[in-house]
Image 1 (cartoon, rainbow, N blue to C red):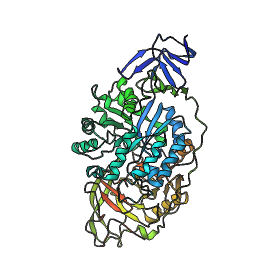
Image 2 (cartoon, rainbow, N blue to C red):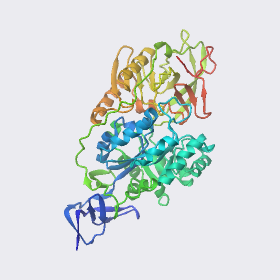
Image 3 (cartoon, rainbow, N blue to C red):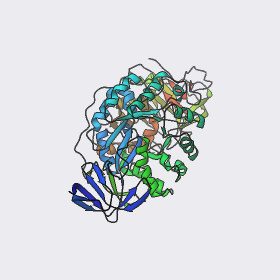
Image 4 (spheres, one colour):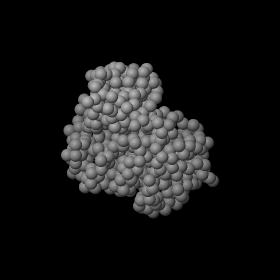
Length: 570
């Protein structure tokens, strides 16, 4: 008796990810699975779709992403990613985890069940990212263990604290070792690490990395036995600098990721489809690029049920009109065409609120005379920073912005426990002429971060996002020009993704009104200037931190008025 299946796709050139070649064949689908890809299979189909002249490739997999960076919930991001051929994402929920602990992770898991997009979660390894961080929660190995019961959990996310790995910190290694008995694995995070340090990470159990910014760094990770995720996000634009490391022989070690990408850029540029487009334009053979976008990511994350168009795999498929342009005709997830968006709304979340008692006087930076200062230098489209040393001069006993050299005041305010900690520093690169920008998105502790041309403008922007229980705002001394409310942990909007995209566009317009236009996203760039595990200078609520020495350093190197890295306790 001939078996009858739901669907036959015929006429397309189908990618065989195992041989990295296209062949014209049939694809037989029943329910959510592929039954056969034989041209002469002894099967009948209830429905036949002719894809003559098109290409058929496996659904794209984003190998490492922080959904929170899009500022929308998982159920909302699914609506846009599916349009761009992404059928699976491997997400690290450590942003909301740093704010709300397990309650934040569970919220993301539950909300993601509203979208057909398959969201797999790697449990956050570093909450906080470093022991001295003043974040919202602390997660030990024992806190994470119950979460492995959730079917969406797929392992341990980026281990960022190299020092803890090197010295064999018990809690860190307990987290790593807990992933493997469940059949999962642990991601690495090797920003700034040497080849020898990468070996230490690999030997301790971390088998992936997404922090390479050059061909040399990518090759070092492959040599250490790691799967390497080539990254192209909103601020981490590394793909063109790394794709040259991929060869015919080592391609299986490479996949794609976005890491951090705003909802506006996802709509305008795309997701993994943009990575594909750029890699192919840079000379990568399309067959390799599309395998990296699917099967190679599945291999890295041990997702054995997807990533290829072959019998027994999930029917996650993308129909392509043009291989080089990655022009998507239709997308199938688990056997269902994704022609319409799901009618879902973000789940409510009320577990956290912004808490601080900042006063205008807390923003003063006493300074007499002229001294050398340690200044955070923005690197456009990168999350690393320069350690700039320039002289600054006090005016009437305190620091004043230097607009000619673009040296502005930066502030980080603890917002989880109302401790009163305020870190003050200097930053170069935002080109503000008047006004300020503030955000409750500030990796990874997610305290309030702001930069501005005056204390009054900084205060205005901070109070604007406090009033909405989190968000991003642009303000002048007198008024708030734009505000994007982020009431879900101070990180996510409770609005549809299209609304958030419009709000973000208005925020950028407001920024351009108070600055010289910059060729990078100033908001996501600002959010990474507080992350102490990324080179080189960063600012926390406790003061200025130097990654190279892994210690706090003073802002003013020889100030006549004592200034201990801007740390205040009120």
